[in-house]
Length: 495
Image (spheres, rainbow, N blue to C red):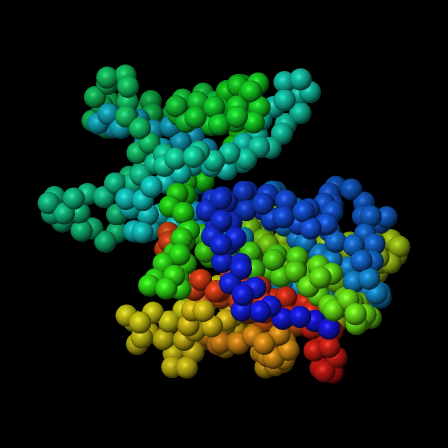
């Protein structure tokens, strides 16, 4: 007998979600935390470069990463049979951010040290002005004793950067609605200690010379020296032998450092960065963990034989920029992972026919945040299609194929919601506005799998900080767990 989450259990996910957001400011940190969370609940890590034939078993739980920025976790039913379907939740775990340029050192201007950054997707918008910004990400370090390249994660513990606004006293320049992101939104990261007072004018073209990337010992010389020192000192807390010359390369993000926190008179809100879409990724992973825990999926006194499917969660990188990279949802990551699972469970005798049967018997929730109704702009919402906070997941509809939702998939998820006592809302944008996209259409079309787009609503999408309901993380877990728990009985209702 499947158990739905109680009100108290729904609320119990609030603080862990706040911690997840605050402690994982980059996509690399988020995926690393997800991996450790999965391992702590009995999931085994698989390596893509190895064969899986003798490693995947019925009743087993596994996960695989790609690039350290995408992860797919899955659990095989103890009564799985060849050709049975997969219950899939696909989300994206990347968020709008800014990334440090390959050679970010910039000429000192008026005594300020600045850092060259580039917007990822729609970041570096007006909400990034005057924010306390941190720096962190993935660092490649050479082990001098073995010569092997290791990946380490780093985040500096205090605000490093800030993009200062121009005071209104300076007139029209301060009110420019379209500031130049290359020249007017450059963060300051320190003061020049050399005593030079460069005004920023280029006396010659030397600063525009070609940047050379050659030889691992030269990487640190292409970066701001004090940033290299700060990163090196942080790495030394884990490995006292690390030197700047050991750093081969890095991928660093600049992010909002203000913690996620509760707000509202009764703490009914969450104010946080990176909600889109750490929220649905978090809820999906926690739902898989809960659904595959013996104590939460069934009453031990009532054994069941309906554990015949594969439960899958995919958290993908690069959704905000089109999903076209190898770690994105448009890559072969999910389809090829399912193919390898099916083949391994068939004793290495998987076939296109068996994989296609698995796809046809499966169902996918494309879980991406939706738009909550904003009380100050009611006129831009479609009547009766304006989701509210702390109510539940919203089905996302679009007549032009930006989402996968249709009548069958909606009816399917409605039955799941009924069985796990969840409420479903619905969102569709007005005819005079444009809908955003999700990973749903690209994945469902690649696999031919039935699918629906449904996610938790938020205010201020694509702002550096956004708002959701304090119960929304748990409400997402409740529905997504219900999807895993009740998939087989609901699927049996549809011919």
